[in-house]
Every structure is written in C-alpha cells, then in structure tokens.
Length: 132
Image 1: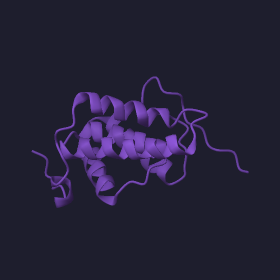
Image 2: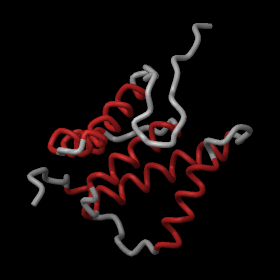
Image 3: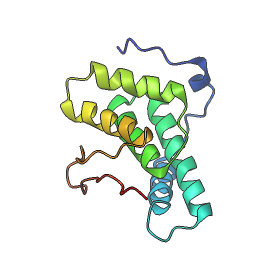
C-alpha cells in the first residue's frame, strides 16, 4: 500500500474513462508536440497530457504517472503542485532507477534545464538550447 495520501480533489473526478478515450487523449497529446502544430493543437495537447497524468494518479499508477508527468512537461503544460508531489514520492520510493531518472528529467525540463540524456530508451537525447 502506498504511504502517500491523495488530496481530496482526486476523489471527485470520474473513473469511467474507456480505453478508447485514453488512446484518443494520448494521440492528441502527441499531436500537439509535432513540428507544425498550431496554437490550438498545442493547447489541447497540454490539456490532454494533464488529464492523462491526473488519471494515472487517481488510479495510483505510480510509474505511469511519472511517464505522464514527462509527457505533460514536454507539452509545456502547467502541472499542479499535488501532481509534482505525488510523482516525486513515487520516484523517491521506487527502486527502479528509470523512474528516478524520468522524474529528474521532468523536473529539470520544467526548470528550463535540458538534460543531455534521455531516460527513456529509444528516445532521442535532449540537448541544451542555444543561447539567443
């Protein structure tokens, strides 16, 4: 049993999201990060990424929540402090180094620091942005 207690706000959201809805949310979240995506697509992408993160937290899917946190950060979403705390707790209590690295990567990106490594196998390495 997870020692982390979810805030009451997580109890009010619906739990009846179908797999198709989840797939559509993932597809929409990815679409907004593609080159050439317009402002509306990027905004919708951020909203979908946060909803996926929220759902993972509601169901106490810790490792998946950390993956969703990375996705939300990459989309440029504004992430609630409760979400950060939950994912931090998951990362700190996990024995899986990959989960720890994922959280660290998300935290660095959210702080505007681009790591020169990618914790997700098969993903391109992130590089620092050039100074303007």
